[in-house]
Image (cartoon, rainbow, N blue to C red; front, top):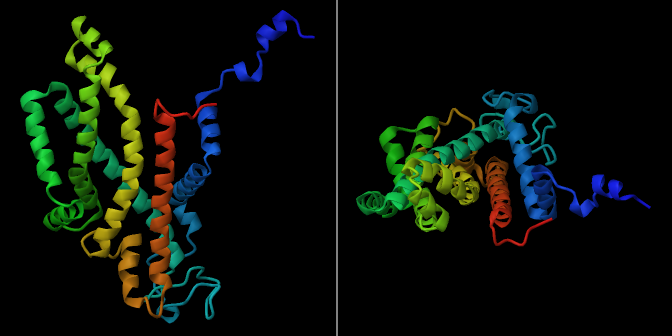
Length: 304
């Protein structure tokens, strides 16, 4: 039998403190869809990092004699080209691998820019109210009056098609959703007792915003951002597909889709594989986003 001292130094498993990382990993493992999404995203990140080692060919290298070669498992396929080649003989697999980094870069960078702008304006609008709130919300109404994709096309046509301009466009057109979200949360938080107490004790507006309000906005912003990354990837592919996004010389999934639409009848693999890549990537972000919403929601039943 264990002594009292042993029980004190060796508490039962249920009473032992679980590290935050281990807790989230356990919760992630409990959700099969979230686990699948996280594994897909991990594979995409590793692919983006080690694209030169993973790609079997130079994505820009052309070989007209091998043009429109079907996938390796199809009749007439070549083992050297796992997913086949396009109309210029470029390897589809290598181009898809190089397209991963661009898609993730556009998605994450666009979310960072739009999230930063939207959070700042939403905080100012919700906390200060009055004229500040009125001016910012009128700008939000103007942006929301136009369809998001149409507004993005307008800015791209004005700035010109390029990778950096696509990111800028996503940032200056996507901030309104963040502003509305943060404003609504701030309006509720500023009326809570601890915020009122901090104000009565003489805390400055800067301290109240960044010490008491902003930390409580992190969870909803993270949840929303996880969904927005997938949306931005779709928008980039849509703009590129329409010829208004990233130049054709850069291997992206959108460019591959635009090329493949002219060969759907005799070279289905040109558009099928990049289309599947976009679908799987967006689904992975949505799965992880749903899981984040469940575990970060204070009313959620998720627990160890």
